[in-house]
Image 1 (cartoon, rainbow, N blue to C red):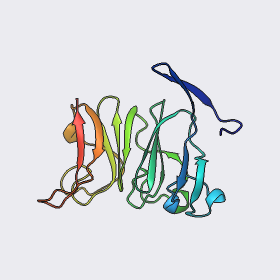
Image 2: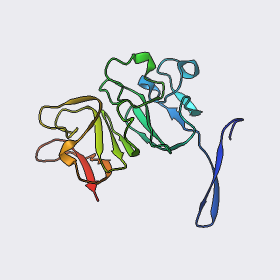
Image 3: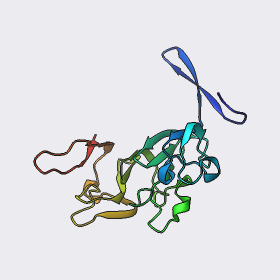
Length: 192
C-alpha cells in the first residue's frame, strides 16, 4: 500500500501494465545499519518486520544491490548511494565515517565524475561500472578480490582497476563457490 507523497510510475511489459513505487524499502536484520533505517524507527541496529521506506535516497533510484550488511542504490542520474556496515570501507566513505551514520544513505565518495551504470555489493567489497566500461572497486580483500594488484588489500574510496583500462566491463558477479585447489574465493567479471 502506498502512502501519501510516494511517487508512482507505470511500467508496461509486453502489454501487461503494472504500477510500481519508486520508493526503496527494506526489512529484516537491521544489524550494523544494513536496512538504511533511522534509529528512531528501529532502534540502534534494530530489525524491521515489515517493508519500511529507506529515507534520504533520491526519488529516481533504478536498481538496488544488497550485500551481506550493506546496500548500494543507483539512480537514473548515474549516482551511487550506499548505507550499512562500513567495517571494511565498503560504503566508500573511508574508515573514519562515524559508526552511528552507517545506517544513513549517502552518495558514494570518489565517483563524482563517473556515470555509474551498474553496481554490485558483496560481503566486504563494492563495485561500480562506469558508462565507459571502467570498473571501480572499494572495500577490503585478503586474496586479491579487489583486483588492484598484489599487496593491495584495501581501498577506502572507489579505485579504478587500471589493469582493465580499455576493456568494456559489462557485469560483475560474485563467485559464491571456493576454488577446490586453492581454497580461495574470487571476483568474476565479463567484458564486451
